[in-house]
Image (cartoon, rainbow, N blue to C red):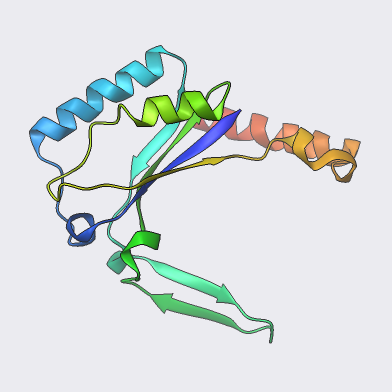
Length: 144
């Protein structure tokens, strides 16, 4: 199973405050552990939402673009990982070890399982499965 680990923004990350050397060192060690354990597939921090945009698709067919910053804070992301683990319980156990929080003293991390082809059942036709497999292979080639 793959999981997306979503680090929620706080007033510090939204202000563009970067982690100090101590936290970067701790996070680097933690990421090394994830990689050595075969857990981490990807992970990145995100710039503050003030540097982002939201695109909304309305029922009326209109597409609306809103520049950041965004609120409420608890719904804004500051970073993510993608991990591969056998269970949600193991994902939770790893998250409990994340070197957090940053300067603010509190942090929220959300764990969400990523859909796999088999989750879609009969709707994932052989043609769609082949397309998905081809796309993933193409992405892997580009990443290397």
